[in-house]
Image 1: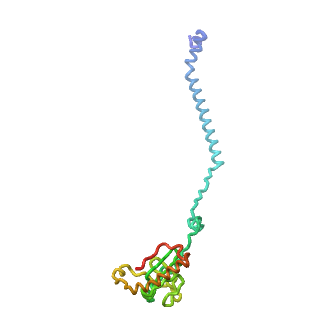
Image 2 (image 1 turned 120 degrees about the vertical axis):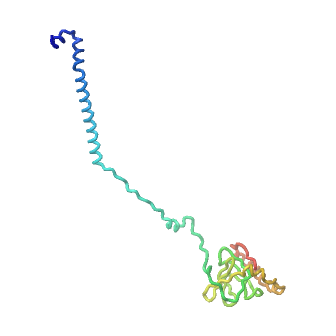
Length: 209
């Protein structure tokens, strides 16, 4: 009995089972091959579509613009208002050679508003305001905390207060010298009473050394 006769002799259910056992592995192999081929075709199709879209629309990088802060422009804009310019003319003036003695100062924020007590000696010192003529033909130009500036024929020169070290070694003033200083003190009081706005911005008085 050959295989065909043997299969025909089997019942129908047994024949299908026998064929499945014989041809099942081959059928499963073909199904797997077809599935892999379909999957590979789908992958290749997706890759080709992505390549075409990428080539058609290249990525554009926006240029990066650096913003530099112009500090000079901000400073010159005076956002909070311009600072008042103080008159510093003559701040570095050389020491004068005129025979003058500076014995007292009343200085303020503005060097143009101040008083100075000076003269050819401490006994002859008088009170002078900025703009007044001083002994020797010069004119009081400005007053600072430790010195004054005088205008001598268009040239600015400074006159400083005596150093405290020298004051410690100086002899005490005589009663006659004190009496000679009273007119200068009285003139200062009179000037302050007559012109109260003159010392509106005075910071502090400078004692006579």
